[in-house]
Image (cartoon, rainbow, N blue to C red; front, side, top):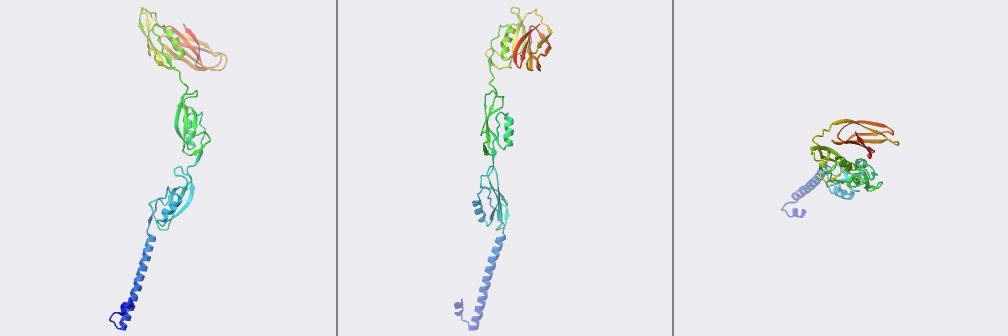
Length: 325
């Protein structure tokens, strides 16, 4: 710049004054630039920054993401978290998309993964009890399979994983559940043209109940001959199912209802459940079902129609048939 001044058509004093002015201008310009840079730096330092999301990152990834925003990372602690894999960040403070100043610290929590729990033994328990026990141990019921078994219905027969095995919390435990014993089925026999009493004796071993009996006059047939049946012959039926019959009666047959008494003495031994079923012209019905002590004397009043008998069961096993006069 001095050489440029020397070329100007100025005397010595004028050139000296110009040089001083130019020097002052240079100093002012430099000071202005420095002040502007300092102001920009100070402004940048105080300008809020948006916090990036670091949840789900490992520590190295999080440090790099924060450093790009002139922020720092601080690990506060590690804790179990069933939703976040081991070694990844599960929490951060401040939260993502919030504002903080440059150079500030973002605190994070590292996941220790899903905590392990011991699988309890739930076999031989009811399905509902198994559900409650698994939930109490932070586990869930998985697939449920069923099979025929001598165990009671809904009893747990097996489990996977096995008892005492260590698994992640809230894992699924598959259960094998009993659907109860295989109930035998029976084929409804053809009882048409048979005496009603014979029909009853044919059905009694299967535990089939005669629910309804309807009479029709047929003087050419013996009284109480089966005319029709429901269900039809060949129909598959189960124990405790009921059937209905239409039977013959004589036009001059005046069947009256009568009162009778059923008497039974309990045998020696342990207390047993006594069940008394009555069969008469109206069907079959249970008139008594209670626990009785050995040698108890039981007398039951009953109203019957037509030919009648009582069937005695002890602990659900047929014992004897008693005619009712």
